Image (cartoon, rainbow, N blue to C red):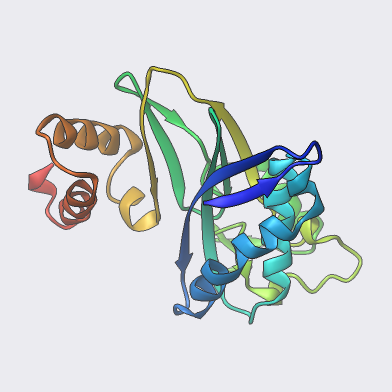
Length: 225
């Protein structure tokens, strides 16, 4: 829970969920887990209720503090009846809406969006075999400062950026549950398969912790789907 006292003196509590998926060891993920939410509540825009801007600033600030390693970040903040999902990388957030799938993020990979490729080229990078400078599959990540050295560009314009894409979702009675997971799940299961799996497990009366464990097991045992 993230407490907040707004400008009008009203106190609110926001619920903050996040996945930090380290690719070159756990150091970056651990540091981000320990610090990004602190940076978030320290931002002046947080007190004004400008949560989308706050989340972007907090992650970019955290990115400056890190060693040159790579990771992806997926965050979701619940504010009243509003869910704010923010992503940089290939972790993903989806919501089950009356059995249907609604994506709350989009994977930042070079083969998906022309805008990502355009930024990479404009910053002096290149693509080889679908990888940034022949190396990274991701087009956004925390760390990887070797791709963020252009002093003439803002952080959002670098070859690899930690700039978050943000999607705002107004929660309704039709919304059943959120799923936030790293690419270890999404590389094996589609969003549709994950939503169907969770709904089935929940219909059997299973607790969320057990469902989470089972979906990880399902990743390794496709016949269990």
